[in-house]
Length: 213
Length: 213
DNA sequence: TGTACATCAGTGAACGCGCGTTCACTGATGTAC
DNA sequence: TGTACATCAGTGAACGCGCGTTCACTGATGTAC
Image (cartoon, rainbow over all chains, first blue to last red; front, side):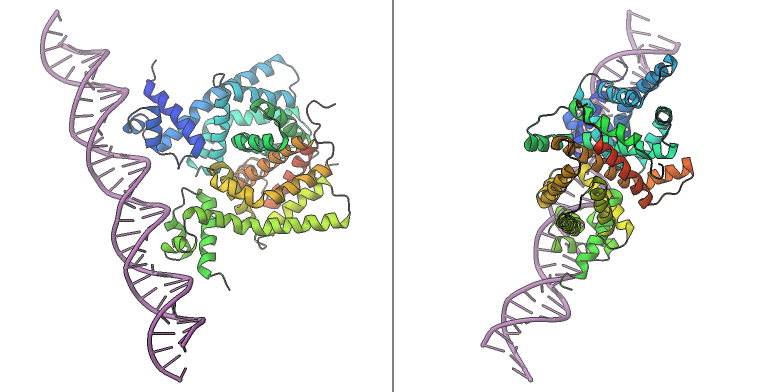
């Protein structure tokens, strides 16, 4: 392998611990000790804690956004009529599957995204925007084509509403699932929750915009 | 006043700084220096940083949940038909207005809630659940009555989806508003965004549940 | 009315601790002549 | 083939810093006799 094993182990450990506790609350000592590597290795390989955080996101998002781009290419080339449901389920499947087959990875992904939005002082947010903004805007355009009744600006907000519902729910999924089990006796999987999210978001996006008949 | 001025000033400063940076990233030195009080005053009045965090939430949520309870009493006593739109707009108005008339306060509230969900290691989340869970469950029951076609468990999830959309959007409102202004030339107020959230959530909650005709 | 004591908000300085980062160093591997 | 040097992943120990918390103390106000 061209990448050293140490780098991967640091990223694995950081991913889990950041998702569990947050960025500021996770020390490099905790990460390196979990990874079984020397404390100084983080600064040796990444340069700083901040750069490590970005690297964790990059390892998640780069394959994801590449796969999304590719799927969008295929769908557009196919000339088929691309529905809202289709677009959202493609994203959902890619998010769940583009990091190996471990569904726990996908949950980490959403937890980290939630943290990133809540905590990031700017460095992370602007980095993500610059790095992945293009794919995001393309996806937004596809959504607009699939729901031509919704004006672009309305769509912009509704996508963020849906993103918020997704990130918030999947980021706090464990405790919500516990409550659900205690109150309703139903033991839901991540896929079950996803299946509930989709119709909610589709209906929200399709809602009659305010100030329209 | 029975409460000392120092206590209020600490809470004011903590509220703003926590919302700006997060809990771990905000030091007691930053808070006390902004408040213009002695560093030791936080531990004197609150006992610890953790207790200060809880106190910040309590000052927000206690008047809010009391006002919500009261409004629900009124509505139920009135015998009127309580619609989904009505319920959600009551919550929205109370959240916006129950902390004086300053709309900036409401935005802080959502930012803090987002942080609480993302960061809270448990102490804050379980504290909030214990302290305000009853009002929340009552509100959930009202929603169930207003949309009898949605099964209780489905409603549980959809309310959290809507909560997620709200908290996520209003918590990151400033930067989303900037993007919206840059991309669409529209300068939206918090009230405008709220007006867009409401139909999205109502439509999402009313969506045909999966596995139903 | 005067004195002794209790209470309490607030203070200034220091405490020990864990943090991210740095630095001189090791040892293995590759390269040039 | 042998030797000298360069590169590079990784290490162990220490650095200085900012953190939350503690503690002995002050000064004002209230209370008992």
